[in-house]
Length: 533
Ligand code: 3UK
Image (cartoon, rainbow, N blue to C red):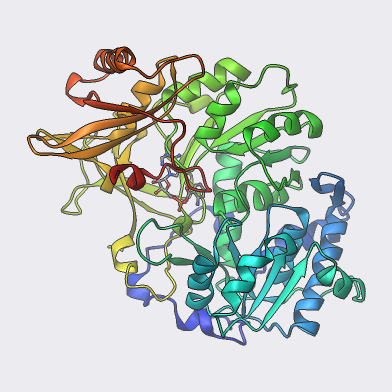
């Protein structure tokens, strides 16, 4: 095996033992990677060397960077990391900031130095930052000044964190201004770890997933060319944070893999995204199902004529949401399931193969199947555990839970799925969220999809509530569109609507109306917070 460039061997020393790794598959010709590989050389330096440095790369309010601009800023920051902060290959560098070209430049700077980027969600509090810093033994941080307070609190309790440098207040900018704008990207091994992405686990300590330079390039060669089919003059835009691998891929890696550009907005709520699409003439949009629902109601008055492709991920896409977005914009959504452990999307489709209610088929490069509790493949139509393998997979940083995610070489995502007669994968629920009521297995998201098809329903969440007689009952939390009243009559209307569109035993026996539903920063419903009320 080719030699690691890591001077600090922390990551290599904490990989799971080989027999606990998922099986990795590199069958496609485009997945034959050289032994030495640095993703910053591939995604950034390559364009400049090829004479394409003047292409537009990143935009934000008041800012337009070409590939050359981004390379120069990343090179200067890489010099600050090495010369002023003492970063060596293999060190973990925490990144904390809202989406912006500066955060992207910091990310590439870390890649260039051969260090490991640990990007953190902007909303994390000191306690959560501490968990990440301690687990990944982080030594350095680049932090947007406006988000400095929580990190400062965390740093006081984290002795490994030696150096914090802020940007947005002139500190990093002043150091960078004194540096040359050239930097020799470190010649890393394809299997050197370059990012540790933490899962937003709802229970227990967050898990750090380790991904290599080769993994970053592998995801660029699987889903984008086969499902998204981007072109060099596409303008990407969207909401997921770069600290969420959905956002890292969709808003940074994928556009740069084809020489396209991306708009990085610090806040991308539906109210901000719609006018921004018009302003930047964006053509490719990434966001979560809940955001598509909110935007569909507000498209009027916004010029969305530049929009060509819309991608939904993070949680299941109800058929009603797909229909709503198509009605509002004429665009067929591209759904895809991804996971932090897998780095990006592994089951999806292109617009021509969209099937309402299904996630799609395994992305070329990946294999997937549905297994029973005994680990054996189930026949079509039966709901079981989704299992997947491909060029990327789960490697938790020193974590016993590796054994739960990887079994017999398969990655088990924790999702309950079935496969239909045509090979389409159909999402049921998170395995832990399956409701058992009166002896029936009921998938909450199926009931949610049914309720969302009712015109009065804006958002909903369906969970199992403990019940003496039935074990659990199906309970729906519903947010109504403005102008509708959540009274007893509405409860009956929605119950009848559900009974008419899905098997009657699945109907919500209890319905509670809410102003809003608890969601994560990545757009996922927090069902556990509804179960314990
Ligand atoms: C759920 C979906 C149904 C599913 C992610 C795209 O969401 C991402 O990563 P996370 O680690 O969560 C993984 C879990 O989220 N999920 C995601 N997408 C879908 N369920 N349909 C979907 N389309 O439970 C999965 O196991 O936060 C998504 C790319 C990169 C990502 N990290």
